Image (cartoon, rainbow, N blue to C red; front, side, top):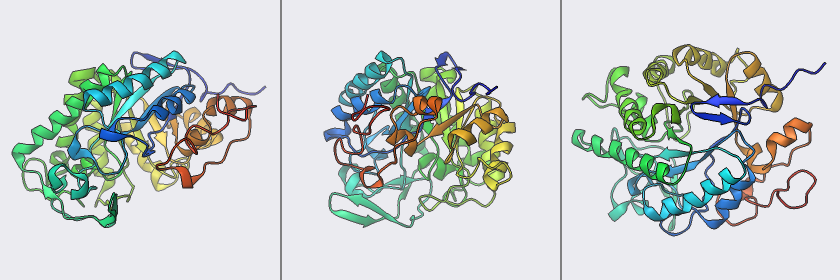
Length: 365
């Protein structure tokens, strides 16, 4: 007899009962309108995917200084909050749960995207390789300005502002974006943090910013409605660390003390428990005793194996949820999947955003 699907079984996440253990991963779509307000199309985009056990939104900037990409939404103004309220209402009307991802890009920006043409901020003045897309075309990254010690509480307060705006906008919780080479990740890793004060040097100091941001956000929401996303082995955005097992083990231990909703790990290849990614996921599983969300190219089969093997409690899906608004239903029926179109991932309108067909339909559900 076929075993029941653990992936499609309900899961209690803090105060929220999720319909299944499938999480829609945060994915930048670059379709926000003026003043970083989510577009009207975003209402339909998220509504279509409300069958996920949990939706985590695309990254939402907590302040104007947190912007690093064109047409990405914010979560710090009344207008942005009103735009998100329409989205949370649409998801809730279909019985879904949705967390806002709180984001500050740090050094991965450019003066053309910053208020008053200012330099981007970072823990240390280290220029990343790569380019930023601006209205004037691609621009090479610049040397960021290292945050002064007395400025750090201001940035932490910006995360709290974003958390309050998300609460007022009707979200079910928030995810702190500590992954992919953005500001929190920049503080954590010794390749980007060479400070000599209480936020740099030993791993305990480098994890301080993460701890203080998490405390500020949890004070708004309650820790059991706050998640954190980390990417321990990712080199994206020119990131590196001399000892990721130690660095992220410390981060996981710090987060374990809060009683958070979850830890969300971006580890491409972690479906294989014998890989480096699989080993570090197991290491962090020991350090963080709350729910763990695995992310990194999982299929239906590898996600079931991760959950049944106790390596994760939930699994998040990115491009497959983008192309299949009814992904849980497709998994339940063993149906084929739509293929995502990378040419429409970022920017544009409905094409590649709200026009992927649902099962048995020529138009989305």
